[in-house]
Image (cartoon, rainbow, N blue to C red):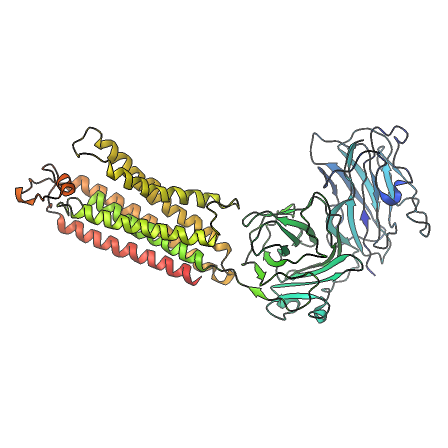
Length: 603
């Protein structure tokens, strides 16, 4: 039988003057300081237990290993502690030796049936404030197998943390290659709820496997998870089918690359990283494996969770959607917050389920149709329609001097606004009418609002543009042009790229190369439009000519009259060149826009 060894550190009060030299025997079983009218703080504070001296391949029975309890905050110290090593049967194992004047051994007996352990507990020997303390732990004899460190810290009489668990389990180094623990596949559908991808996969053939069962008598849920790559794998319980305010179990490769850590986490929003719960005392790590091809973990959590101060959901009574997610881990990451983006689209159950329901898990795919429609409308708007309308106004007055450029400009810009508003309506329907969601994607949303407002502002400015010879017409030209180019066109094109980055999260892994190609095409479109803008400006400076206008070219239309004043250019000798360049520009922009939309649509 495998054995868990729990290492628990308890800070003793600085103002307990009757016990300045260590924890009393009464604290051996509860590991809670006797501080009337005070309660422990949530979480682990700023303290950690350094176990790096124990190899990741496992400890050698009987060997001595140096541990260090320290504060990670230079402004925080502690005065007392108690440290034990326990099995899952709640027996003390292993022993400690005194290597610091700050420590002493405490004889403990956890229950009347247990033997007395003279060196199974170590505590403080004085009330001096310290930022760290060295400890020497003697590993238990062969056959104990599994060790997990848990500790608590107290800074003073009213400020203390208890039962903080380290998330790294350690195993006895038996010298043999550990076999992959067998998941309880044979219990799927009878005793356990199971989700496997691909369907009915086993072990290394599983991209994702999660098996869980509820033990109501013991008040726990037992979970097994497997991923055929190093990284992380998560099982979530949610009140709705959208990420956010979810209770999530995460199994992740440790930073040492050889072991596995498990944490009870919560998801704060659709695009926010998971964060570890402050209280991990409700998680009991049972078994793990970490090989080149997979990670595996088996653990239990109390059905009610960690209580006050946590985001744990009551899994004994509720009905929840299940989320299944996985991803790759940065080699330097740890699960203080699971900050990685999923490597694939999270799978979600079709309906709410009881955690105790062992029937077949039915999955629904995220509906990306509205997202794709929004993207297609906006891409066509900002990578084709808007540039065409803007270039008509800036560079084709000479080619279409009799007011035709104006009517073309107005027609194209009205079409631009129609497509833009259609894209807005589609995404609002997708987001249930929420204009801005506080889910980590605000940049895209805020820039979207700006680019929507810019064409409307230009339309209003157009009404009050005044006479071409007016004193303030230069100001209109400046504001109208800047607003069109900067706030509308280029911000709109950049926002499309931001949107594609977000859409990439919802795309199946095997199709993400299509989204990347869409991003490349968007970048190509921006480069091409910028190049055309540069060429047109240079061309205009070098070849711009003005020729007196024939008197019979003036029409009776009031707006056209304004546009065809005597000082306005007439068709120039480079008419054919401008039209030819414009046709080439339209064909290339239209091709790039359509190609980008197609790639996104099939991704």
